[in-house]
Length: 353
Image (cartoon, rainbow, N blue to C red):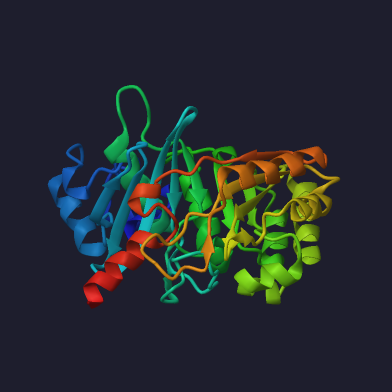
């Protein structure tokens, strides 16, 4: 059964044509759906139309399996599609608005060592409407008289967005449509582990989406130890793709860099590595976004751990002194399994046990 949130307004109009209902009905239905209103609660359309829509389409928003609220206000949701397909999304309250981190796949096949999303592999891609439904649901739950529940979006939850390319592109069209929730592309960021061909393809789309690249190491040898994708694409290829994205879109590229320790020593956060990192990205519009590793906090055998504040600040200072824009992102949600895939993995392991 087709998912109703996969439809654009024009597609919904075509679906309703055989019913000979007034054309404005499609706008009423579409507007209500994008406010997170369930079909059965769209009271300004006829009852028989509501019944028909529920017969023809899956009209359900994802089910909330679990919600966690951090002491810093971060909210993490474990959501289920079709009862069994679990994904996560995280709502972060910030001074410029509310940012929702959404998932693009059920699971992930990238296998990054520091991320829980791919511990059980990839289950399936989410459709464009299933990605959108996360936004609509969380926006409805968190909208107040003073602020919309979701003002910004980051595609950085479970899954690799560029590994689900067509559905993600379709989602970007739906979520930024003036007919729907209408979130500007400039308020959307897409985070990738570094699929070089897809980055170039995405650049050619010439959207105004912010591109974020998970780098996490200043050289190929180190990156290959933590990110399997690095065995397919070198850092040089990745940097060249990032430069191409800037050339095509004129949007600066964000490089995400999680600071990690191993056996009590800097793994990727020594001063020399900071200078090496700066040399990689110097010379075009880019920014280094540092964050202390958010470890798998229920994995007592974790090899990679976060550094002390002193080590982290020394690393950042070395990058800045090398002439590169760099900031330290504040960790949020540490007390609620805030990192990608943690809550889902904990839930799955509990169910299995």
